[in-house]
Length: 490
Image (cartoon, rainbow, N blue to C red; front, side, top):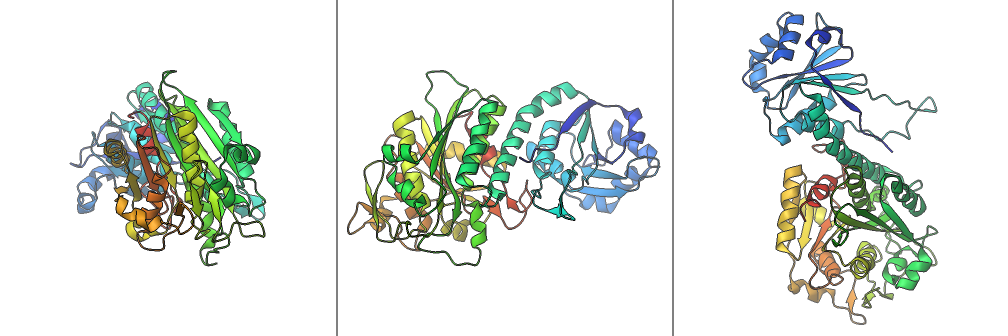
């Protein structure tokens, strides 16, 4: 997997600044004041920082914005990255500063002169999150590219304290990268077998991982999930990941992810244009995997179970057809109107299984479920559907704190009439109108009456056509930071 940039924390040494190679990042406060490290850089550069701080261009710079000064006089560094930032920034601005530095980091080493700046750990977190590139399939003259990302060193006054505070954030960054890699992988590589193997490998970091194969799923009655994958040569699976960091008698919180490794739409075939993007239709399962990785790496003091349904939706002589009726693990029957409304069939069985086996204290599912949510919210917000106001408020608060867009959407029994089938208990597709809402209403039928539950439709945020606050375009890792934070609070 892609590993986050290694960030080292060292004691501030102003005498070493002149000889630092690569790039050097220095902070200037919004009022133009220079700290001791900036003053040393300013003296080496014959007053260049002071002149910049007094310039109108600096005044127009926003907080956390940067300016690159190339070939600094009096220094061995190839460039100085100047960051406009208060000595006591908010966590959001500290992360933004880190992101801005990552964009100007270059391929060599970066030395960040933090001194006594507050929230240095958040700066390092933002830098790590943005310093990501998925380029393992690009080659130079037919040979795989060599790793070109240089290390980062932060000079701070209390390096041990900053390193301690940065450690859990580094674990989250690794979880985010794990999710991004999964979502970015092509479907001929990330098959259901390969996906399950990558999750099983997380036993090495302390997760209990169990893989349920098709024969076991048959015995459990997961017929709606199996129906989605029956047209593919790739076997359907359910992977269960458990992190037991809390009290032994504490019920786990359940995270459930849709893991359609490729979605052709099945017999209800999607248009060819844009179908290549359906490698990201396992985004929900990717987020669950990333959260579980982060929890294990930082040794979170809570019990969480992550369950993902891994299938491939392909057209073949064995594929399910529009008009088929399948029975869920719960026992409800579903008329398949559109085989491209497959994600809810996968989630229905996994949601029910999670409740029957683990009796969780709460449950959240994630899925790249509907194009309708992109129509409604674009690529800025995930759609949030909930049956419990307290859980929903806690989740939205966590998302806001982490800078991940989320917007609550309506749910109402009024939409249930759209799910009525002439021959079964319900149908899986209700047409274009309120498509995201009716999908959530469908899933709600597989949530027990007293179970606090949230459905997150992440179709618009799992992979984006432009860069986001913390990621280049492509897989964003949306949700890992939010749910990692939330698991400490629920």
